[in-house]
Amino acid sequence: MENLNQTSQEVVQDTLPYTEGPIGNKLDLIDGVEITPISQKLAESFMATAKTGSLSFLKDHQVNFNRDGKYEVSRSMLDNMCQMMKDIKATYLTFNFVQIDPKDSRIKLNPYSEGKMIYMVASLQTSDKETIDGNNYLIMNADLNLSIKDLKISDQSLKDLSKLYRDHGHKVLTKYSNKENTICISYHIVDLINTLSKDPCEKFKVNLCEITDVQNVVSDTSRLRWDRYRRFFETREKQMTLVFTTDTGYYDMGSLYP
Image (cartoon, rainbow, N blue to C red; front, side):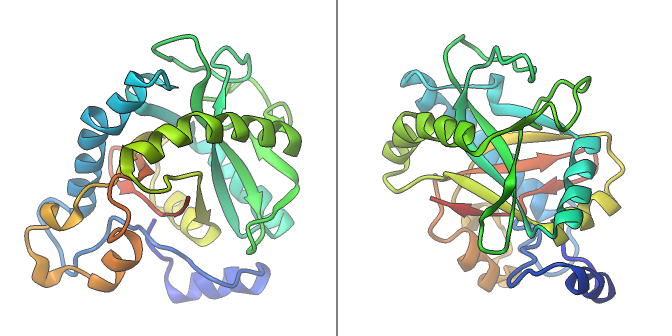
């Protein structure tokens, strides 16, 4: 997600104890304006490559995921998360990769099979990536008839679900990429505030994606923001990420943690 202007950042800094960030939209790597934004080009590349690459590999190794690697989260859920982060002075909204029973009554998933499947649990965390007071939530594809309280899970439940992922899905993804693959993705609160203030959508589509060879997608490397490219993508090829899409934007604003 793109950075806020300086004034908005100062307001957040006055109330939140963060020590790094905001991250900004990682897909924004070109200086200047293009007819087709580079964020769209990269997002489409990440999604298309995942379909024939990592998602196909997961399927072949009996690791389930929501159909076509597509999830969703409502704007109201993200608004609630953002307000809770402000209330408890959280810095990061971290999505922890887990494997979960797709028949869990609190969520509405559409898996291609009935076995445990890859899912992302949202946790509200400090600047040191410590979860605050067991604030872990099932907000992806959540049953909107349920309250945030109903969607909360304990630290122990998250630990158990995370272990399922580390013992199965994560090992398969690491085999696929020949490097430690993604365990969680953290979104800075400033980036979250910025996107929610700019994008009027009612829900965000969330795509389980694979980082591709970014330089091959960027046609004009003379305008490539090399510092951002090296920080976010240079060593990340074949690792999983999440790309949020709406009718008006493409966002990959998190830091990946293997």
